Amino acid sequence: MFKEITIGRLRRVALLLAFAGSLGACAGGLITEAPALHVAIAGGESEAQLIRQLEAQGYNDVRVTEFRPNNVDRHPELMHAFRSADDEDAQVTPVHVGWNGTAVKDGRTFDVYVTQASVR
Image (cartoon, rainbow, N blue to C red; front, top):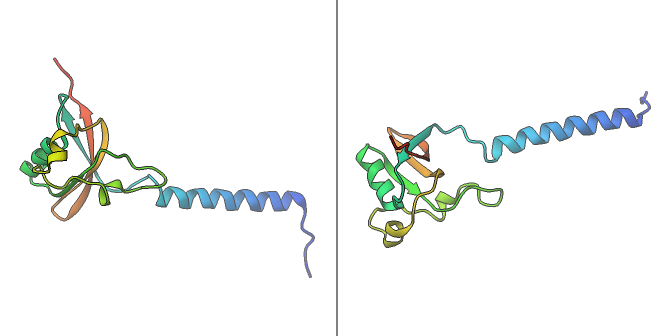
């Protein structure tokens, strides 16, 4: 009635469960399916300037932050975001290369990535 469970079979089951768990972690982790918006900067721009630039391009609900996503805070733009170019802190906080927050256009949320503009 019951099959004898061997150590080898238990290891295979454990590996399968670990693999399935890692797939679930990726789905809920730092991997996102939001479309990416890449913004090239020359250097020295503030978060306020980034907000103004995105709003001039038709984006709204812009949320930029100096913090990067991590395992503890996967969406820092929800709690620690600059939402207005008039924010005094946003005016003195520099943007950084990489992910800076999110912006909405035509009902779609975009992840905002800043790249260093090439100088020619």
